[in-house]
Amino acid sequence: MTEANPGVRERPRSPHLQVWRWHVTMLTSILNRVTGVGLYGAALLAAIWVITLAAGPEAYATYMALLGSLVGKLALFLITVSIFYHLAAGVRHLVWDAGKAFDLKTADASSWAVIIFGVVAAIAVWVIAATTGALG
Amino acid sequence: MSQFRTPLSRARGRGAAHHGAGHWISERVSSIALVPLMLWTVYAAIHLAPLSRDTAAIWIAQPLNAVLMVLTFAISFWHMHSGLRVVIEDYVETLGLKTAALLANLFVCVFAGGLAIFSILKIAFGGVL
Image 1 (tube, each protein chain N blue to C red):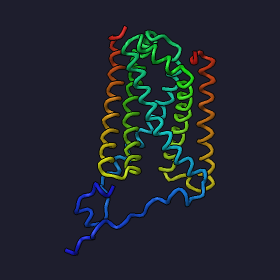
Image 2 (cartoon, chains in turn yellow, purple):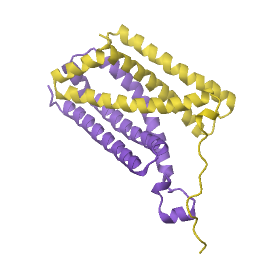
Image 3 (cartoon, rainbow over the protein chains, first blue to last red):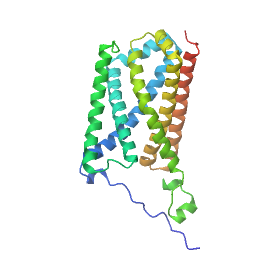
Image 4 (cartoon, one colour):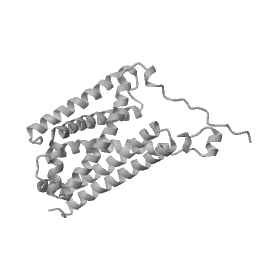
């Protein structure tokens, strides 16, 4: 048997951020991670919501007051943007997984599409929420 | 990830663990399931927000709503665990910290997901009114 390598040969690494010119496909990739991590926190908030609902009226009222506060509403709006952004970006990834829409022009266009969709869908949902009395 | 490799695999200097495809596929399958579930979740949130706690509990107790809510939590926590796992593997360098973060990710997802799903079942089986 030949002698083993003294250590692992350095694997190629991702290029560092500072040597890359910013472009929109890079932004959407980073945003997909950021919103994913943000939605991790959102899921924990949703878990606390259903736990307090099962716990009783007092716990539920306290938690709903927290969510209904200014900070709570701001967090919920950002969560709504994150849901729609991450959903659209996820569908875009599925299209890529099918081997389609890889060319630069399409990738740039779909980058802007998912960003705009995330913001517009969130605003639309909050307008609907306001008209149906969900915002108190 | 090199610290997690066995001496033999390091000596060979190449190779994956040969089970990455399963993780990749489960991320995709859960993401497809979450598309309709998250649209339903947004609808449910708007519907439930103005309701009193008891009225909200009655709505959740309906079989379709209870099942959709359990599925949303189960698949979301599964998907979250997969996603954050990759983030930890990418950014946390030291072995001890990486191991602790991966374990914390798993335990938080199972614990919070378990509590949420148990709470829905408790509401659905009428233990809360």
